[in-house]
Image (cartoon, one colour):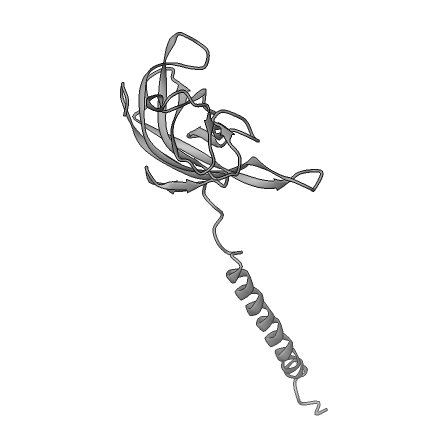
Length: 199
C-alpha cells in the first residue's frame, strides 16, 4: 500500500457496498409496510354513516332512520317518562330468531349504544307498535324497531347511535360457533331529533 494514500479513502470505498445493501433492505421493508397498511393512521373511531345507510354488524344489518323525543313507558313500568326513541330498520342475518333485547350473546341491543362517550346502553326496545307486539327478529325478515333511552335534562337536538361489531366465534368445545358482540365500535350514525311525537 502506498503510504501516501489516505487510509480513510480505502475504508470509505469498503463501506459503500454495505451502505447500499442496508439502504436497499430499508426500501424493501418500507414498501412492504406501506402495502400492508403499517403506515396508515390509527382509526380515529367508528365509521361515520349517514342516516338511512346500512351498517352490516355481522349478526344484524341496521339502518338508523330517525329519532324523536316523547313520553313513553319503559320496560314494565306503567309510568310515562321522557325518552329518546330511535327508529331502526333491522335485519337478522343469522340462521335463528333473535331477541330484540339482550346482552353480548343474543339480542340486538347488545350491539347498540348512544353516544358520545361515555356510551349508554338502551333502556328498552320495542317492535314497531303498528305491527304488533313481537319480541323477536326472524332470520332475513327486515323489521322496524324502536330503541329507547330515558332522558334527563334538556332533550337533545341530535342523537348519535353507535353500532358495535358482532363476531361469529368458536366455542370452547371447538365443535360449534356462536355470535357475540365485540368491543369494536363499527359505525356511528347521527340523526336530528324531532321534539315530541313520532318522527
